[in-house]
Length: 175
Image (cartoon, rainbow, N blue to C red; front, side, top):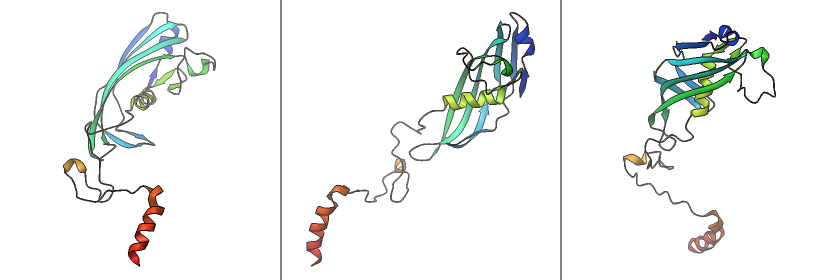
């Protein structure tokens, strides 16, 4: 959704409060596709700081389904986003302005709320998703979820540096 901020950029001390419905149905990235199961509206407060500069503050709560990084069981992932960005109209952005954030979500005088939300999800996505802290993962031999119990597979992995010595001992048994 595009939100026109031209009045906020022009009028001194202008404050715009908006409740924007979240149109996202999921989060698609190089990491995977995660369906969005619950969402709140994006509550925004946009304040004029000076002519041509504004502060965007907002919050939203989103609930996704994502696989556990160890056992691949679906896990609910809750993101409580708190947005705080400084913006200028896209055509007024200067490359060396350190106070202005990345403006990929600004289109002229309009704020693209979906792009802003996507950027916030990317920044706040957890580095590791676990179903529980002591998740045992899956068996590398048979693929069974080890949280449900041991599978009995031999998961011994010999040290490859010892392969030459192992060949010496195994060679003697074959003769």
